[in-house]
Length: 175
Image (cartoon, rainbow, N blue to C red; front, side):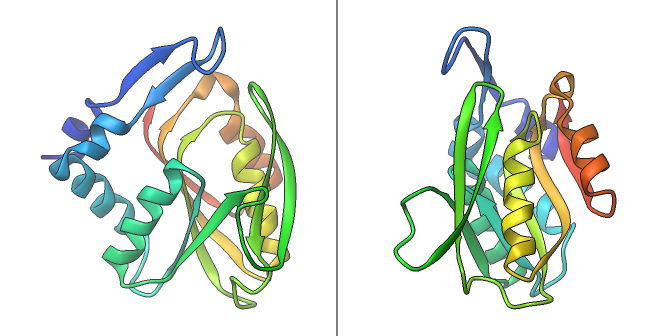
């Protein structure tokens, strides 16, 4: 299965989690071994063996962990508030439908480490921006943002380019 076929498995759920939001459900893509493998290999092609891979909770975890495995790399979980057991640093941000906070362990990233950052959707850019800030504060530097789906009308890519012009952004499909 190629990437285009894999992406065709994404389904839209209107008005979830609240009216007006068009949730893009990647679970059918993840349920297909061939589709999941195609996406994992495509994302891994943006890195090199040993590249540190960070994933944003929750769906970004799934993809990033598989990409890290494909590259023979380490995986860093960037979690929602209160879910990590060790000392953390936090960053709050706005979503298109609310607010949230991300955290990472204080010792998760060695100073100077290059990181690929993965999530399933790029919408307003708030989640990615918060994760970038956490990685920067940890001493790492994000070299590439990877996402399956980008919702262009919400302007996240433009916001991220203004704030982080040195970071490459790759989306497999734009809606």
